Image 1: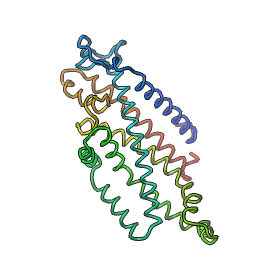
Image 2 (image 1 turned 90 degrees about the vertical axis):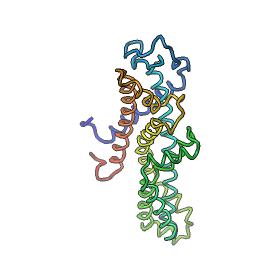
Image 3 (image 1 turned 60 degrees about the vertical axis):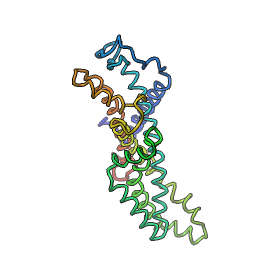
Image 4 (image 1 turned 120 degrees about the vertical axis):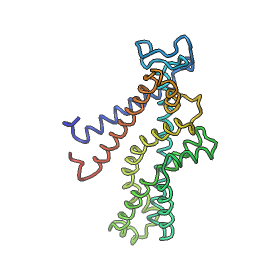
Length: 274
């Protein structure tokens, strides 16, 4: 990978990520419920050719449960990241194009959200909304937009001072026309990079909150639920019930994070030619 240029790395990582996403999501949809049902005759089986990830204390196939859990975690993470990125764009544009009072209110809101640890705030929002998928999704989406909103605000402030924007105003173009034709095209790269970089954080927060028992319900085969259940038996020697599902989650997160970093450096003029 070190011999490849930045553009080639982004293309390869994007292809790999799309293949992994399609494979995991297809497995999560196509795997029947019977494949993850309990069977006490196969309980606590270590990894083998028949059960690559072993089985848990109830005899459930951990590979099948991990694939279904990854599909759930990736769906929740993508949906929350997309909502959060859209919110960040609207907040950043409103702060940069509004009055000084609007800008001050938006900055105060950003400081307020960033001042509370994300995990605690997600737990509070999820608990207030009755937990479950809806509460977890809203909690993650409501806590991950702040950094991107500040970046968008700074970008819009810089774009507003450009000469072509002033010429458009002199020609009588409306603020909406300037927003659609001058501002939004320049904000799309920041939007996509921010979306990709938010995705790993959203997945990890979904897994951590579900692990603590404030996220998805226990019957949902999510990675956080699998890791939480494995803690009861890991002291008995069932290391595979925690290590292998956790390792699968970490690999997905590292892959997306690597893609986001390379895409960010590709869009940066100072490192795009590396």
